[in-house]
Length: 368
Image (spheres, rainbow, N blue to C red):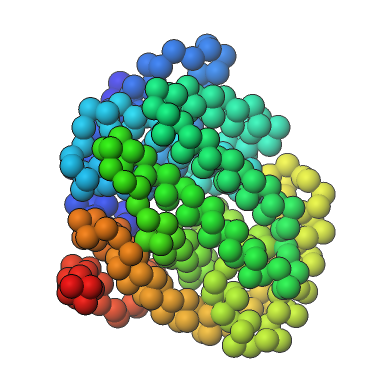
């Protein structure tokens, strides 16, 4: 049985160009996981997350890993052998994220906690982490990197869970922690390839703006495309603090009071620890009851927050390329540009900016 993968259609650029080369490698990695010896009673759970999943979670991470390997000397057998671990790493991120976010769907299918219940997420995360550490222990640098990555990620997610529907006084800190989750995940994917290539790690000053662009684009898409209509969580109703929200409040300070009012309704519901399906049904009731308030807040964020957030993405695009090693600047430009290009593909949105190879060459010229 061959693995059939559905690649995210909205991410073009480098992700589209490399699909013919990287797609078979990712499919092969999934097949290797299918034949990995694991306890018989664990296979149905692992299968649901890995080889039965038509679109691997956080599928852009293995693309970043392979692209970095290719740009730093070529994709070697060492990179191919570690690719299944990268896939497991992405799925563990999904289990953690979906459990903390109480998400019902991801990429058109039920999340692990929705399918098997929140109580199953802890043992599943433990089993996945055990597999990841076992497959990493042959390389001390890889082992230390993945251990540090998950320590940081899980600590940040615990903080986020405890501060859902935060007071506006915590908004800046909330966003910093949200970005840090993206930074450690992106850094892990990029740097694990460099470790296996015996190359210096990518500077944090380059990784951080790339990760923040990716997070901002995801948040903007969630707002513009109203992803709840596709069965995914709506950030505003889930108590998620985003850059567009913060920028909108800076422009219209009284918006903070409206957000507090809206979130008070949802916070009371979240504190009841309902099963995900029931939580989503009750949240829909609150959504209907608070629709005028929600629509008003969303309108201000779209009109005042999103344009400013997009401008900041462009600033971070230049920073991500500028701070990258010269040999990796073209790759960083491609990765950042692909996220920005995703905005062009949003419904009701047009991004008219110069990105890509020309901008990369301009920055390189400025740096001499």
